[in-house]
Length: 181
Image 1 (cartoon, rainbow, N blue to C red):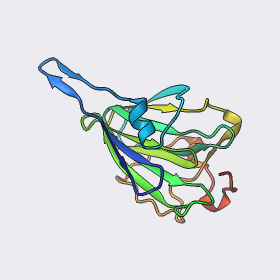
Image 2: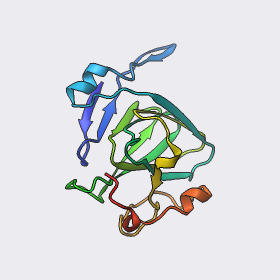
Image 3: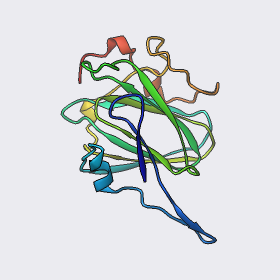
Image 4: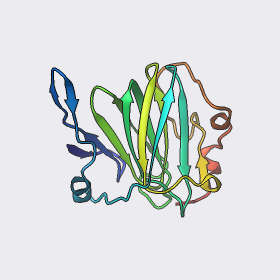
């Protein structure tokens, strides 16, 4: 398992090392001591899974406000996504900047996103199965989001198809976001 810092402070790409043979593979997906060595000490309290049936599904950009802010450890089990995260920590030198990473089932790569980031993804294939651990329980009264196509963020999403939920299509612009972090 290799943890590599990404351009936005606190985010990491985690590459897993499967052991393969003719039967398939075995892979360790989480080692508390390896994460702690990088300053990532989390008590994961909930694990979520989503299935997106079509290429072009865009989910996000979502976050939870304190005191229920969530760090996320995201992995694709089937298919491929373009994963995006936006720094919404008001005191951060990368506030308002976004990062991205392609995740797919074959590369065995995950992404770690700390509290204080909005998160979303775009499906690059049909039948994407994605799982993620979080360190705080879902709290509907503390959820927030940012519009996926906000020009102030300038996110260059891949593809042209955009299959969004009504809720995600109505998210506010970045400049309407109160300082929550």
